[in-house]
Length: 122
Image 1 (tube, helix red, strand yellow):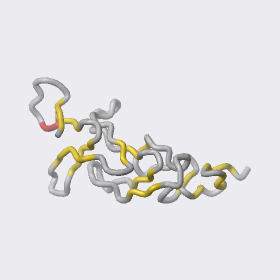
Image 2 (cartoon, helix red, strand yellow):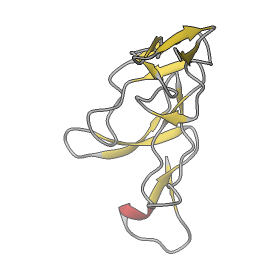
Image 3 (cartoon, helix red, strand yellow):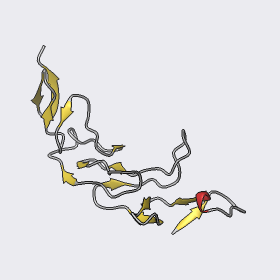
Image 4 (cartoon, rainbow, N blue to C red):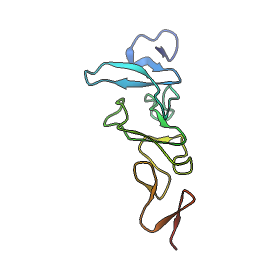
């Protein structure tokens, strides 16, 4: 179920998803509000800066693969070892600074893992 931004709107482009759902585009170009799956945070509505449908975010403790296109399902959902590596409220497919890997469980060159956090070798 979607809702419009206000009274009197008549276009599909005026529809937004409610919290707990995200705007999904199937390959047949159909659009709908899809239930937020495990590991996702779905604030619903629109992004304040660009006014686009608000995409889902990663929940704390999860690493989510960036979808191949806007509105598509994520490429993977993985539980992380902890919320230090995967703090949540972040864009799909991203890790904290200097973290790398599918579950953000590796460090970029020049850093080492200390209790889940990537620390500089210097």
